[in-house]
Image 1 (cartoon, rainbow, N blue to C red):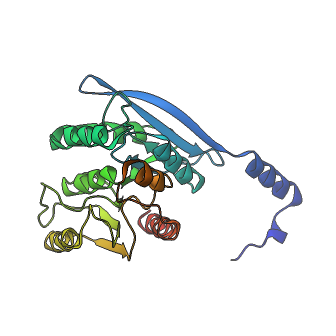
Image 2: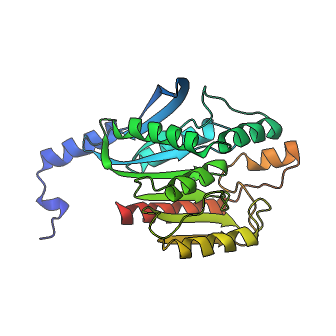
Length: 264
């Protein structure tokens, strides 16, 4: 039976409205250890309801755990999820120059098992949060983080879904049939020099061979790092082939929200 607002007692309607007005995004910075090394996480959720909701891990670009990553966690919180911006480098390390960022990224990528341990540790902390349904977990990542979440799916982690934004689609891990249980979405730029068309094609072939449920969306003419509003600044400051694209960013986000509604 369809319920109309007219059927709700006035006192209840006023109470619900007041609660909605008072609800806001809550945030918490947490410290956790991976193999004895300190890591920093940032959890965001909306206190409009006390019900458990899906949790989403947010993995940073090659710059490290930064404000952009935290902003994405808060955006997810406003959409009804509890999100945790994770720290894949440890000690809250972040780079202010591409050479330092590349060094951090290479070090992290040099040991996939250690990366898996770090990711699983962060995932466990998110699952333990009082607002999270531990059986409904997804992950999304940007640039380096996009590659991370795809590799976690390749390694068979128990995730409902992963979303990669302008992440590398190639990997030293080649998934085989049955390895991947998470559903996958990958958003990439058609003009991304870091993720060329051959890499996109190779990813499609790999996912097909692995019998994975996946989707790849390429935005024509769009460059690397199109989700990050600071990409234009990086392009100018460091002469990097990157660029923010508001239209592509909005389309990718809307697609992600539909994806999460579907898998959860």
